[in-house]
Image (cartoon, rainbow, N blue to C red):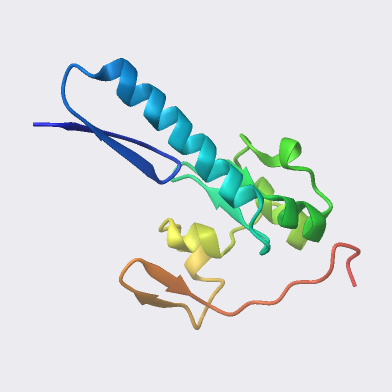
Length: 127
């Protein structure tokens, strides 16, 4: 039976005994996915299940003024600081099942794996 390796939402199916080829293909696939995310026109961040930022694209840099290098690899809800001025739960935390996040979104809706809510926040300057 084949094994499945996955990272960054990409998966490579490989037969047993093909570790080197599978790992190389997975690395290439993850690199392509990172490039795609980086060049999306919409501000996009990706937060892993452990709460660590794993992608922060150029449009997100433009929106927040925070370089990807300052965000990627960091946890502790640091991704909220450019929006709220503090580390606090955001919708992504509700999607990850954090009860303190769900309380902030009274109109939160779930449809399978999709989580939807409406929120507002001040600008980066606090206005």
